[in-house]
Length: 626
Image (cartoon, rainbow, N blue to C red; front, side, top):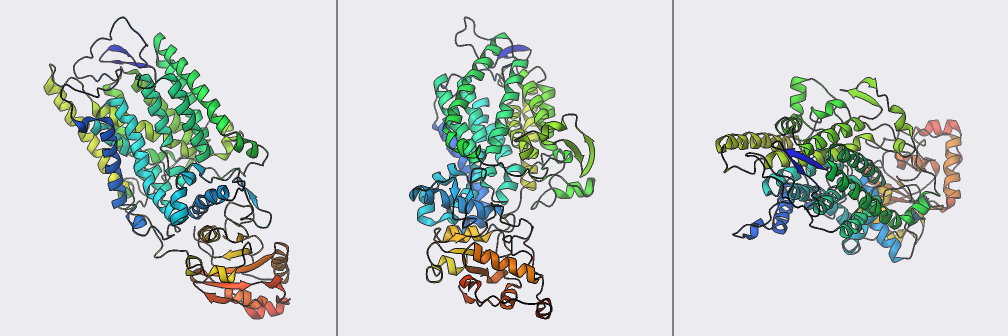
């Protein structure tokens, strides 16, 4: 972002440090975005203070979120209940408990022997959200990781919206346009979808807006270059540790932004963009230095298997996501029939209209060129290597080979939409901020302009409200059994004992282990290769629903080789496992919502023939949901 023309007059976005002549006054009805926002007036009122307005915005966002979608979650903070949407929540509960535990016991936090026991597992390529884990450590230690997870999940949306508000407030100098702009980002489909799934690494999306805010503050002269370098380096390092993929996406978007700034700027603006490039480059050196411990481990460890393509369906730009809460999915079914809009990528017609109206009414503004062009480029990148429209493959893009490159192939293209939502937030705030000269000649035209802009803003808000989920889909009660929550496991399990947890719900083993204070070790784990992603069971057990002599021997070898001392079966989701283990010769004891099966090295396991197994008629194991 380098500079733009307002009302036909050129305004440098990055103002020179010293100029002999002040820029001309903007034309009537034109906003002067080149100057830092006016923060005072002859009659000072405390509600106009930026700090007060920032706190007020955070309070508004929190009240809306905590009273609607997050209300069931905060009503029972001690319950682990966010399991139906995704098993990722249990992993993040574990991660919030793991970092304080590892630091407190002097362990390497990037390798854990508590999962994938007895060998353990590297956490170098696992998202364990250390910035959030360290931030919430006092709460985790005193109230438990489930409480910390629930509170962080509930606050993720309002905090992200607040960060975008700061950007919009700095850009426009006005509270109400910034409040709507912050909501466009924080209450976006991207935020809600990842919040519902309990993905803390994605729904905590405040760091990209904070970086933009620092750049704007530097542009306005509110902070010095040295302060920008240090604070931007800390923000980048925090994003690196929070989620590496978002860090990589942020880096790519920054490069595109700087190139676009050079393209639209005048000579003075280009000098400012080049200076910003140098400063951000120094910030990256600071961030990489802070990330050196992680990089040393990660580069010596094999990277994970590339995920399946997670690209955005083009129809997501105008169609609401199907099946969302009290949402606008009826519009899609009424006007377009069944559709496959990508979750987390839905934009909607009102926000697209904001971009179009801003481009038409401010067509001389170079900042509008910048925002519009960047929005289109990012949206094209989010489509991935192949364009899909309503689920149908339409065309392979010429640059599809780029998605086979290292690191790029390990990412989900549709997650780039996070940055488009930030652009949409800024565009909405700029449009609503509108005229700076309502008292100048042509005031009636300015008033009609205000009415039109805010009517469109009201549409944006209304469609956002209608398309947001009604509330989180939660379990009827905590998925942590009394066996764990009451501490009864101390009597049944030896300290450090290797345990297998069997349940058809998410990855409860890591959840139970974290709530027990890591007093026992776990076979498998959702983040490890020893975990069957489709069946939800440890490798060596997922085929026991149809036991054969060979599969029984594999199970016995697993128990003996991994020194498994006990098997815990969730009684609420036990499926046929009581029958299966009865066939093998294992005897369990029901207590506190689980069945505890001491293995004793599988000494009581029976060798059965096919005929005996057939006579046992063990029913099929229920698969884990989703």
